[in-house]
Length: 395
Length: 220
Image (tube, rainbow over all chains, first blue to last red; front, top):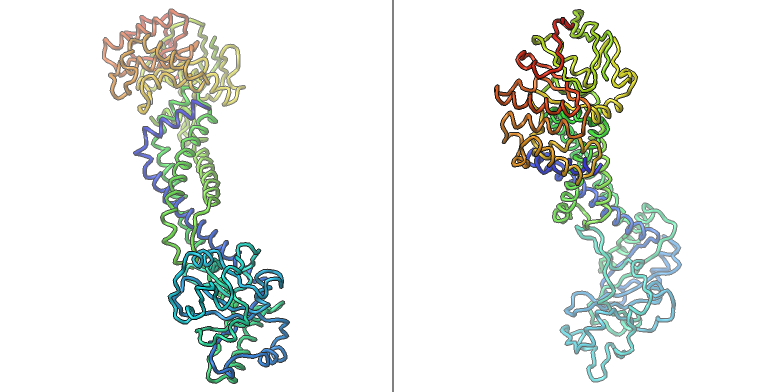
């Protein structure tokens, strides 16, 4: 066995030029396989993230907060929605300060939001602050936005009349931000969740006296046990009701589940296509590889004949060829796999952020072992028909 | 040692049958230097291939050390080739991708002998055939005579009891041919049975016995 391994190694070294086209083919094949597997794994990760969100369904209504109270959605509207469209048990309301120049984000949230975030009612009246926002506020932060600066008292060290030292750092609370669905971004790279690190969350009551802030109000309605089509239909009804009632304000009704679902179904189809195309290319490369090795084997009839004469058994010759192919395929697999890493970002445009996964290397290694075994089995069949005398006569 | 009884080898070409060996019988004793001569196509190489267990036959019996060859499987045949028979061919049959030392180690490698011992044996054998300086050369860098010496060193590397030589001087000039014959004679003196096929009747003097073949039968 050791001798056969040594011979395989020596033969590869001596024949490296002859093997070069085969090695290149395997490297390209494995590189493509690795890329396709990584894309599929990235898609799967995205699918899992989205599946997690589907466990709780939301519809979000948003509108800019104006001075005209009549333009804002109120409890009467929510009651109407509850009675006519869907029996909501609670709603999350928050206002988000838009288009300002600070290095952190400000949010005013209702009790349901606080409960969703912290899992208890304990923090309803507190100000919650992300660790990054906390850090910059404590480093002698200079406010840039005039509107916000008005509410900062540097002598008392308060923001919106609440002492900064009383803010509760979010890191110290077991947060469940994903379920809020308020800061999901859909980009060409897929779904991204915003971190709460740079947020400051104030109780919703704080905003009542702050009409001069450029805020947008969000009302999130939870839908339990409803399928996607039902939510889309309800969203359309609510939008048309709000648009009819508030003619001066454009209410935007966003169905996050619908959006996520549409991305999901598009990407599922896309992943199928990528899978099919790259598997097809890999299959072509596999077959051409087998063809090349068969030609190469025919050229080595003399060596096989001599090995037979020297007393090599059929199994020893088969093992020798297997080791040689295995060595080439495994080394090429490793190179192909590593080569796929710099190529992966090129495929980010397909709708998912591609990251290299160690699983792809394991899958490629298994595929390579199977490929080597397949090639060796095919070559062994050819070897079976090579008797010492046949090889000798061919010399 | 070798007992052949009524052995026939037939080549078929469509309906036409050609007897390469026609009902021949032969006994070879241990330590003999047997030469088989005859014209091209008379069946001498076919006989050598059958004796060397690399070709099969159609009828008759072949006993090697009392064992009926027909009754042993391919794996055992390979093992017998490995342990008991050495081959020398007109075209040397060295592997061009291996250097002289590696070529000599080939048989021992398949026999599972350790690297250290293999290398030690190969160095001793190459010195025995007088080519120590060419140990790391490749076959393409050697003359015909040198290549044949390496082939002989390889053939005796596993201490075989029988050496089969098919026209070992066929590709060599007269003087080099005589050198190779002297080497074979020396091996025979050491107790190795040598069965050689040649069409050169001048070499018959090296043998202890010779047989002449014609149309698949012995005529003397």
